Image (tube, rainbow, N blue to C red; front, top):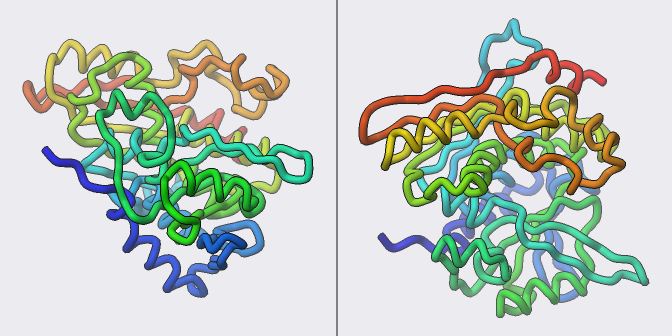
Length: 321
């Protein structure tokens, strides 16, 4: 089956954001090299809807992100739900923040991770060899989690890697602490499950469809606290269902191994875990970055395998302190 160009797929969505910039409370400007910059939360308020659309951009235009309500008696009843019929391409080929980018600005390093469809053109990640996918397009779109606009040197680096002129490049950005940034990070719940499935060596070709839901975290000004809340939303309250083909025993094994509770670092708010390792991400068990609850449904046998649990107590600690 021929896969779509995710940069072409996302272009109408980017145009929608640009055309509705005022209503979305985002700012669209041209950078010094002619690139299009869309600020979703640095010098503007942005909002939940800007975050929803930003999340769909991250998914390469191949996913739907919606807001839903569960039991209103729960402390955090509003949810972000993510669905894509192309889970491997949308989540791993686009949404995953796998492009490490760096530029010098007045003697200081500007380091960010890039996500979105431009990765499939310009990133040198070996993951794309495994996916068997590379995009070709006349324009490219990238999303970065940042508290300032990218410098010209970084814009030039991205455009060069994508083999396009800067004028054909669109960069969307928002800090973790913003409303839009909070939503787009929480909306990675399905992507986190796909990434862990890959780390567990589950055959990606067997993952046919996927859906996930996660509470909307309340934003907070501090970066560490904001990062903690968005991670905790997934780790302690994210729920994912994957629809798979192939061996049912492998599907059951995946369900049992996916949830975050399997990690040795599970059990306390992420900000506390991060502080305990003095900010060294590499000291945190990578298996922690997983949804709390998982359902894996076999399309071949009709069986569904459940594992994990929602931990409201840890979530409450994270969201209120």
